[in-house]
Length: 231
Figure (tube, one colour):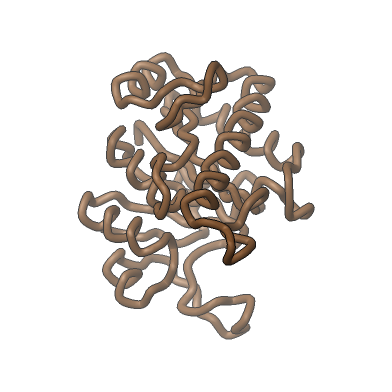
């Protein structure tokens, strides 16, 4: 495995606080990613924004403006997480599909590849840059563009289930499931647009619980306890 794209949910970044950042959680992620970088694996990261913004809070709010706030939430997350990564000894860069002054750099595939080859962790913030597309779609789009080998979905839940395990104690966890099953069963690994994009471009996804000990390193090195979504 040469290049991975890691998706960190905003809720996972918040830890038990449920909002904002939990520095211990983020530093734990950084130390794991440092191991992958030291092993020569190229790592890109997309974050969600749910620790700050969960969509329209009022029907009086325009959907486009609401989505723009969500995009900016992911920029804040990436700037914060990249700084924790830097403190752990890694070179980082934050790329966005729109200009943010000197805070970030404008995304291009060539620029991303240049930073990957330098051994830097590349953060893809701001989603697709357009409303009506989630960070799920953003992570699959970036994975396709930079030709990542796999998307790692680090969530607050430890895999893919046939129903919501929070609501159904008898929910069945899949060790492996095809993207066609995900789409047909609306299993919500990622949203439908992202699922179809992953299927059409044959991008596999591995879903696992971020809070499990050493979960990122274990996933990459084959000691995997989540769900593999095959294409």
